[in-house]
Image (tube, rainbow, N blue to C red; front, side, top):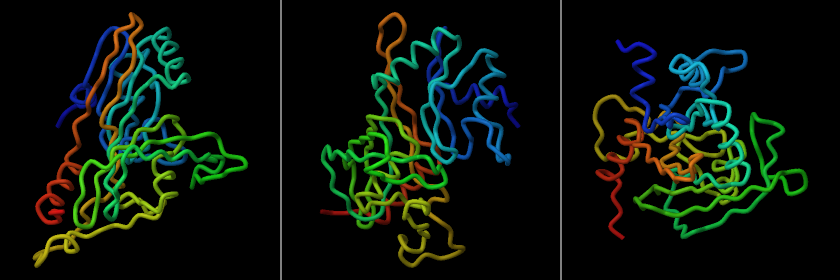
Length: 241
């Protein structure tokens, strides 16, 4: 069994003197969870690797993908300015229910995250929030979307998709359903199981500017469960349109 240090090192996608970019697996919280413990958080693992490590942003516990970690205070300040000025490019992939055809579709709706249990659209008290959506692939009953948030609000992609009557697979909090293998695979035999146990959202790409001005773009490969989901859809839910 791998140690925590070896496990964390296997997640590293990019490393220099100022930053790490890691491919966070699903079910690993970014920070310590309040009132519960489900897994060693990313921040703790990062600080075992480097005591000065600081997360530059967060992903939900179930969301997988690219996270930037600063290795010193100046690097963190430099990255914080980029996030504040919306200069960090972030691209997520999501599998949603139904055939959804988006082409650079902009959702520009304010989000209220005062109640983090369930974030909502709030045109009076919400903060400005914008996300671009584009369809990557269509299946018979599902779609693979590219999601590019301009702002970085809590649950932004999930809330903006719900506002378009579009729901991520297994995202029960925002209207999604848990779909079983038997729904997709005809004449399924054996024990049935969900095609995805978590909501199907992955931070697939991130780009930022280093202190010397060089722009770095990092792709984060799909984790096993997301990869298996797409293989199942390509095999059993193929759309010939």
